[in-house]
Length: 97
Image (cartoon, rainbow, N blue to C red; front, side, top):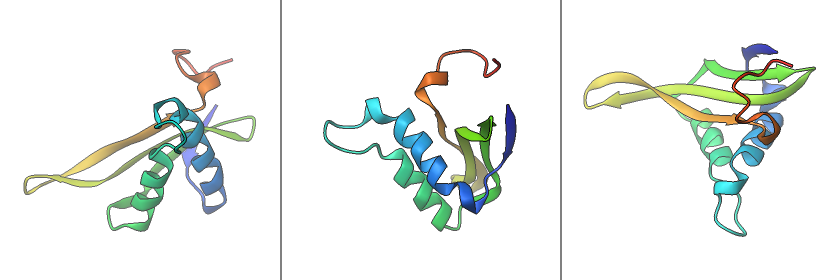
């Protein structure tokens, strides 16, 4: 398992991870909101590219997490999420083989 920063070539794989990870939470007949949320964060001022991380196994992106700029009142903070993991790896407690 390799944890690394997101790269531009991985955007589609990240969308696919979030689409799969949150498919069960979406309204029937609709796509989950999380892939669009990541896209919106990426396009905004809150995006911190150095804190957009993917988990890669055998060259495949299997997870993604991002922290973005936020505020609690006037205090700067970091927002964590969404966190997406392919369904086949969810609930395993460890990403090791």
